[in-house]
Length: 329
Image (cartoon, rainbow, N blue to C red; front, side, top):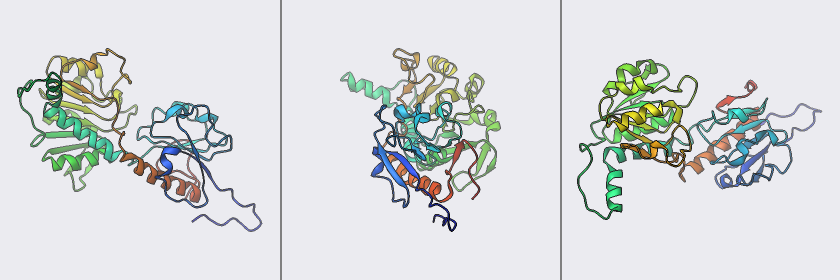
């Protein structure tokens, strides 16, 4: 609960939070926080109506206010609706804290990663195209494949990677988990391998799924040498960020018929019309829709409720990724 103000002190002002209208129905009760709804699609209407705003919650689709955060008067904290946050850093005003959406997209993004894996392994793009041609055709390009009994390398064993691993185990896969540092397993995998072990793990993978954030350490993590270490016909699935992979090297491997790819994220993004990724054989592209699920809204509402509670009680954000240090608890 909020701490009591010292005797004789002025009453503490209730924090003000600007919240996108789409999230209001999913926001839990937060006593002593004033919530001001705003239309995230309106780039002219100032969130908060010109009043000082302590916390600006950005929408599931950030809209124009991602780039205009500095125009919100009194802003002290920003809560993103995305797990990734590198795109927001260039626009974060000085002195403002930033938190990303930890746990919000684990379900939706892991679901899409599994969809991409299954679609590529079972040749669904080929069958969809043959149906569009009005043809019944049981042939497939290349060998018949399955997700069951395959070895899947999950690179980025955080919330999304863990959620994906649960689903992969249900599909009877052997999962190799990779994180920034080596550590013991967690009941799902026997061991979480450090990223420095990628050279020895890549040759064992029938598929590699990228679920890690984009940082200077992860940019280009899967380069030409790493892609060359994968076995023939291995599948690369990227639901992380496009620059984690050397996309030119990946497209070259796919065009040569040696590797396959299923991509929710690309570099550049969005892809311009006619980009080679959209026509290269053995490449399936979807337009960054990993978090585009009704399942994300209630999870964002619950997460934002926790953030506003923490800000009300302690003047800080949970899972802060940028900005000045939070006050001590």
